Image (cartoon, rainbow, N blue to C red; front, side):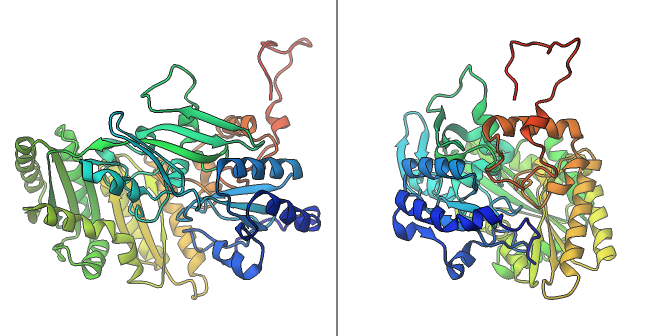
Length: 497
């Protein structure tokens, strides 16, 4: 289905030839893509149900070129959409028909590995997994590990504040980020943070993390690397119901144990994963927990005993502990491949992303089961259960009339339920276009306007990745209106938007 978006403005169309000519003055000629057949490769991201051809694609190779492209877009009043690997599942890098798509795929070099300071400087197009591969021979790794880590880029991880199976204990992208280089809409280059651990200034880097490309274009990232623990073992815990599995997750955390990873899959997801790549999953389990414990050898052995007992107390009907590093990796292989595995059991699926309190897992899973009957669509559930980040995978057939609309409505109900039980609309995939029109279920108009004031500070013309996140975009002048009392502005010394 093609997303209904504003048609390219006539002024932009008239100036398209001139825009392309000027872009080719900035980057090598072949790095500007303007033919329709070639543009098709960029018409969507990981949220494949929405498609839109970009006005033009430009592939810069260095920071100077990015700066000049941004300055040109600002001068010609052209919209611009940053894109990394294009794995966004919320439409965050969906192109605009009247905008430049700025592809960062050529920014793919690891710039420096500093073991003394335990950090790595990389360009934004470097894949997540490549960072770990570059340092693992010295016993280090990069903790955030999305399921798409073999393909997703680190710049996109920063833009969406991505998580992964090991983020319960070691944090999301924001907790493992030390520095950024960013190009702003006017072409100016901003450096934030560095190799040091903290700063006494405003946390602008924290603001940029998870900003979904609305504030600037990332051109360099410095991340923290960790030393691999002495030991790591995994447990497979099977349960007769999703409710008992959810109760076990809550009980593990309540016992004061923070596993390296604590993931949960329902029967549809675990059977699909086992069919896709045999991992030894119990096919008769209604819910499966993969729990990894790491630390010193004695600590891990002790925690394995405690967690196994907690699982039995919560009604587990199967427990299996990894006996080797190879088996631990095998246990995780099914979870890591859950998304492609589910793709093998249906023509299409929509991967949702919401976060709920852990004590609501059982209730929400029960509600999702009822919604499958309401919409007549299957749903496989995969959870970063330890932190309540759920990924329902709604199966549909894009070639079947009405299926896309049913999948969208199904997903919207899940997200509204997430907010209703005290959760949020997204955990790591971002808002993009997928959840944009649901923002009012979580934020008041005042909340949204306040967030847009931040957008205005960085991008007053709303040229950078517009149409994402905010359901209604106010002009910066409107947001800047303040109450005037007796002809005077309050706090006249403060700057106004």
